[in-house]
Image (cartoon, rainbow, N blue to C red; front, side, top):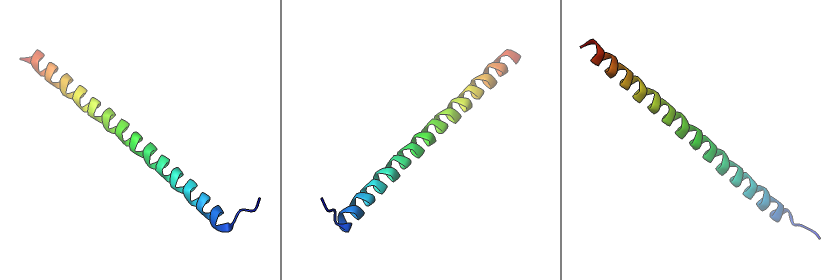
Length: 57
């Protein structure tokens, strides 16, 4: 079975597209997790500061 160079190039190109798409999805997921983590930390800090402010009053 003989495979033409065009078919090989097409297969390689499609593999590259799939890999970059997966990489982009992983980066986006990591960005979302980090954003959620910083949001949670900020809201936690706000709760602590407001509760400590109430205890002083």
